[in-house]
Image (cartoon, rainbow, N blue to C red):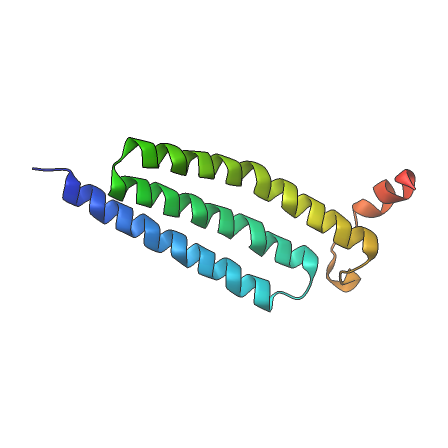
Length: 116
């Protein structure tokens, strides 16, 4: 029995799951009410969806150079997405571009008052 059809099926399923998570992230960006909620949709499902897409593509291609490039892209995504999301959330909080009525606890209030 050859492993190639199995790897193709697993890769296709991972690509479909990654695309579904990316679609969920896009819908969340449109439907969520404020920046602090949207930043979760912009980072968490989008990052996992991208990782699943890369792994699925790597399984289908089965090429060392392509897999290395996809691994580099995954690493950069894992490093840059959380930092960018943190900066967006902090900028939105500091400029007051969020809905205070949606906050359960305002943990940043005391910390930002100390830095000013």
